[in-house]
Amino acid sequence: MIDAGLHISAPWTAPALALSIGYLCGSIPFGAILMRLVGGGDLRAIGSGNIGATNVLRSGRKGLAAATLLLDLAKGWCAVWFASRLLPGQGDVAAAAAVLGHCYPVWLRFSGGKGVATTMGVVLALHVPSGLIYAASWLALLAALRVSSLAGMLAALSAPVSFASFGRSDTLVLVFVALLVLWRHRSNIARLIAGTEPRIGGALRSTG
Image (cartoon, rainbow, N blue to C red; front, side):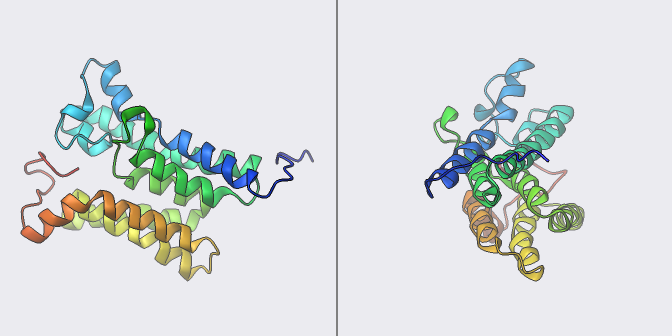
């Protein structure tokens, strides 16, 4: 069998490379790219200004929003997969970096998305059962609550809980990711407290 891992002597090199791989994969702004390709203009000038699927949906392009969701999920999965193959044991570093890259992409002056779909991608790559729990939680909460931001935040919080229940050693990484997703949703949290956060099927102007 061929060993796909890189042989690195310096202890800091592997985490640094995994961080770079994760960030570069996560920072690809698929929503903004797709909007440009179809002549939709700058996605950051629409709605909340975020680059995720929810904001693409505000343009009225449901197919493009679905494609953005899948690509944002896929880039999280790919970041972990590539890093794990090249640098065994560094998948969790790439996972955190991928979500960070999506939220703060250098290409867009660190103005990115909120990380829910990319988080699902990295969770699936790290631990499939937890990823399936994440997906099921997200869809069930979305159907029950009809509030996109709340469903996304609660799904993100389910990841470290799920990892901990399975006794995973990388649970703390998922705690960081969940807190990052919550931080990116801080304006949504304020609207939820105020009772002004729109529901799915209602006004979509600011749900991020």
